[in-house]
Image (tube, rainbow, N blue to C red):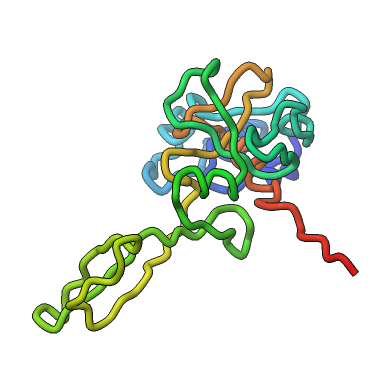
Length: 202
């Protein structure tokens, strides 16, 4: 096995652990790659073999976008899409970030690396009576009258309300469960643009 294959996967992923174990074995060495939550290399390798996923063609979905990977509301394609969480395939709908935010009444913007989103969901305020404590308020109801300061906390996420990343399985029959997406699938979804570039008219 060629060590260069390891560079296709991030250290700490199941795929990296498996390939590193194979590379070590080919040189007569014991496995040595570990995980943040499992420092025993042999146990880490056993875990990885249960969760690792390797694309049949060496590249997830051959690097292409399925023909039916389309926002069910605006029809955009070629961008990240989100699916309904915990919903059967026959009732599944896909939405782009803009349509999902409108539907879920959430505020999102792409992160600098484009692999996730910033959420601006937590509107908080503090009062003169309890200046050290931040309380949550609903911006649609307005700022509380006793507020002396307000903030909007941002956090990184890949979810939009009850919608989660839509990562299709390679057989095209379904989508990966939110906690089951293999690293190659995460990388495929993460590499898609979040929105299409805005073209400026002259």
